[in-house]
Image (tube, rainbow, N blue to C red; front, side):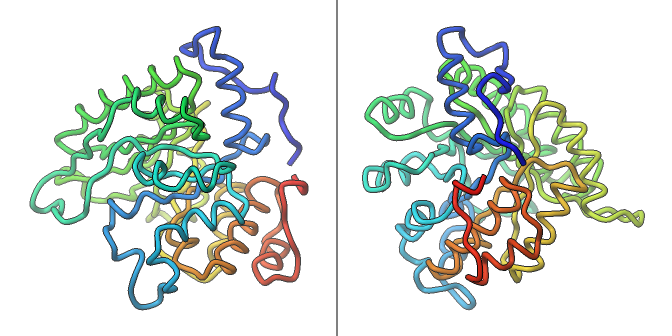
Length: 315
């Protein structure tokens, strides 16, 4: 995939004229000058507590939060996404990483059967801008909406205002949108996933992270995803990575999501960070080879297996 140039970046009209160059720079950094997003999701320490970082099948290195930043530093990623405090604690030691600050989070202790989910905004934009002013390489923000929750209106209003403010300050925004709540009977219904993509576009997001759909009409998940990526319009759609699977399965799914489903990247957490540092770094390179450079699954798998290497110079 050829690189894009600065003048090929579509700048939303709510970006202030004096912030257009800042927005373009942040977009180019986040997408590694390709227009595609490789997002390393590191927000699960709140979302899933410690279950994603310690236990059977998880490398012991993952218990130390710095493992995330070592992977982001040594691997090939577009952005590392995490809460403001997590980023603040480690960013000074890893200044070259592109950071996307996750603005809201909730734990998984209270289940949907007990109460519909609401993920509150944890801090205002000024706190993030102050950190950026202090030298942290923040390129964007992230926010989760649970579509179908009885609290969806609150989350949509928070996200809409946040996107307007972020764009006015030259930052990109990625929305996590998951249908969830008592009104939702199938969280991965293809029509709901496509609906979530359209909501992200209407709120003004630059990218939307969704779960891969699970069609029941004979289509493959990638074929069903094509409807959602089209519905997203100029909001780039990326798929969540989900729980850890073997590398070949994961890379094949990713390739199909992009080349069949029309996705413009990926957002992966557990599949990367639950591995040893060496293996996790190799997987980020394999994922980026497909996402950022259109490498085949076979070539990406060779990167994961250590038979080839992939660097930003290969884009």
